[in-house]
Image 1 (spheres, rainbow, N blue to C red):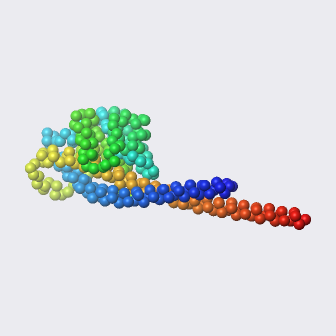
Image 2: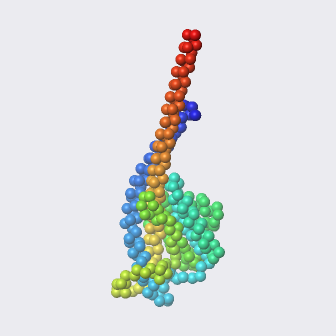
Image 3: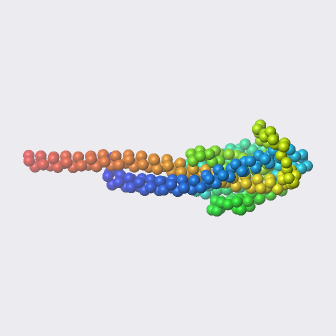
Length: 291
């Protein structure tokens, strides 16, 4: 059994760790509230805009198609994994790395694959195995639409110039504080309803009146939709990160509390045994003197 001094030191160390994890949990909970509001307010708009453009793109003939919807033989793919810059978030970053590796494995025999990483944690791991052409880890220092727009425009230019035939996003989609869903989502080319495989099409879709016309709407809205799609993915990732970290720190605090209680029990047992031994030594000494 460990001596009393060692147990006291361990109890102090575990208690300090428990205070840190508890504080991190509260900070993440506060940040999660703001991030959750942001993504829940943005998601309906982004999804409806994408759905509208998918319907509209499917109704155009080949000559009127946007360059962002044109499908060509896939020989080179760009994968954009979105992780975080900090750890201590459970399996949040590990899941992104695993999904990215699985995605690369799926396409490895069909095309050349490059990576553009967003988030330091995935970048640190993936660049050891794959060709990372660029990282944008600083985006999370000040996440706003203007910064995200620059990255989206770079991806769109790479696609229209023919550098890549497909661009995929890998990110954690926020469901609730305890659940994050890893998604591998096609960013470019923009999929039509037929390509996505949707069966639910609004019965009033053919009754839309387009002003000025479908072609101009496509030309104007698809670039905007793609920028919003990337912004939504980043906001999803931020909310998921805070949820994952809050959950991880909650579990860490519970484990530290349990370990501290076990150490205190061991300390009390050791202290009681020490006192008992001292009493026995005193009694034995007194009996020896009286004899």
